[in-house]
Image 1 (cartoon, rainbow, N blue to C red):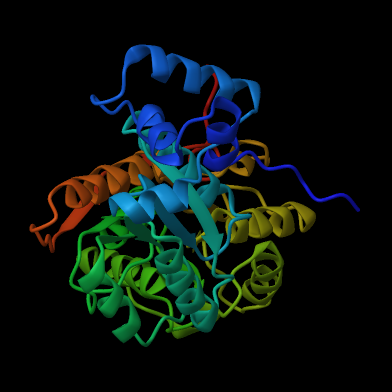
Image 2 (cartoon, rainbow, N blue to C red):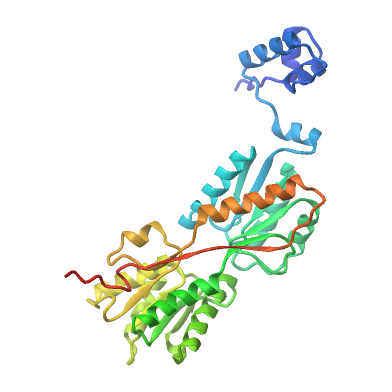
Length: 343
């Protein structure tokens, strides 16, 4: 197989009969190089399809204008909205983005952080794995370059963190169900190793306490994998109880949709017999029937805000920021909790 013909500064210099230094300074618009020479260099560079090596250029300038982004699972709808916000805002600010996936594996997350450092990125946006326990490596990297946590974060890491108020959002969901007259509200959540799940569970408990409703462990269901499948499985468990719940709050839309599908299969009236609410306002929340009441997480805004704070830190090298930025959420009420009456 023939070797790929890559255009280098040396090749452009040979074509023009000038030094590599002259070509380099021409392409960087150096004031010591005449406009005529710059024009000739640009013309040949274009003819030969020259593309600058951003990493080499960044190594020399100690700045690449590249941001590294690490997320747990790139396939999630909410993650896609986060990434759109990140990419759009980064482009506006003149930065490029490298995206990597930790696959919710802490070892992989550490590897990706080290790889981003080797690429010479100017800063890193990190959404933690579900089971991140060790944060020493993250703190070490934070001491070397700007790092901002977003969505899935940890108070153990002293840096800017962009989040929503998960506890308050969950409280508002359960309060909405209570205001509709629901008194026996089940919750489907993750096992105790998820900080986001625990915050939403705390919001659930606070709502019960605020409105003097008893907590019943039989309708508090947890799993390591909160998916549509688990929503279906847990709904069958709830329906088998002697005293069924009159509402279900699932901490993800996928799980809530599994609940709705199972209730529909058993001809349970939603929301009259059992109301259902989810969390995140995914694309599927308006496809399922009845449409799902849920919390709208503005992924685009969270991503864009995280980028803004990261670039601010990149541009202010001596300023170390350690604060939490909360993005507002909205409760979207649909027919899974509130039946529209036509008159």
